[in-house]
Length: 182
Image (tube, rainbow, N blue to C red; front, side, top):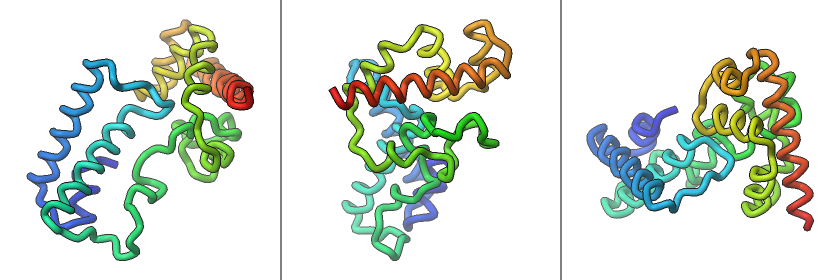
């Protein structure tokens, strides 16, 4: 899902205004990235940029006093299919999932969604993971490349890469649990 249709469908905003907000959001992300203020948070970069753009959109609507098209009054960001959930890749059922991205809400491990995320523990777990695991997880979840391409980066075939990705995610989850308790 992209930001422009998201904003246009949920408010009386023009496509040009939505494109301007997208451009501003991308510029903000680029500045944070260049300044070293962006930290990998376990979810796709596109989800982060989408959130930046959505926040700019909400501010824009408030300034212009435009209503959102969501009559329930809930934040549109809370809708399950708008942006990938952080840690969707740590799903228990990932190896059996037909959804290669592993973001189907039915496949998510609810412990990641219910708990407060300890980012320090996430960073420690990621740092302690093997180089191959860091490469695989970054390639697949941050760069959003195919399993075949990510597996190739570490010298594996696609099927072996799927197993490696699952094991790396499980290892990350185990390490995270250890560090979160500590």
